[in-house]
Amino acid sequence: SRQLPTSPAACLLFHNQTMAAESDAGAETKTGPMLSGWLTKKGAIFKTWNKRWFVLTPTEIQYYGSETDAIPKSSIKIKDCKSVKSGPSANWDAPNSFVVVTAARTYFIIAHNEQDKFKWIQGIGQAIIKSKPEALWDGEPDY
Image (cartoon, rainbow, N blue to C red):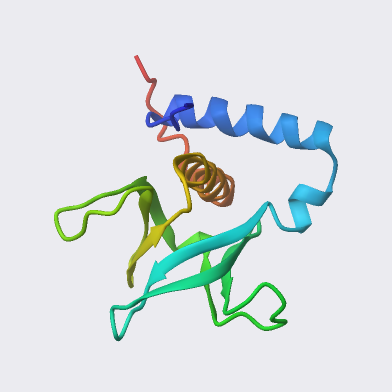
């Protein structure tokens, strides 16, 4: 599995390679859904696990009660995301789990299988990197 870069220089290279690949793939990834599928999310208030239809776009992660709903139950703005990383954590232990961290909340999510988990982590991670290109270079060489 491919690891997301961690250093500023590696992030910039990854960003440039991803943008070049997308320009070769066509415009639909820039405006339409990048990923969609069923994931299980822990609720904010009652802390119960709920199956939701998730849609990742370049600017947000939307989640719906069903695949046919026209209006999302809620969304997470990509610009507000600080990180996405594989679970489990000290507070929960679920296979194929990952977290999306914002300043306001940490979203606990479980994918159907390991392949889907890494697909979502990579997709969300790429969206975060693309949303903050100014943060990829700190002005210092990476050596």
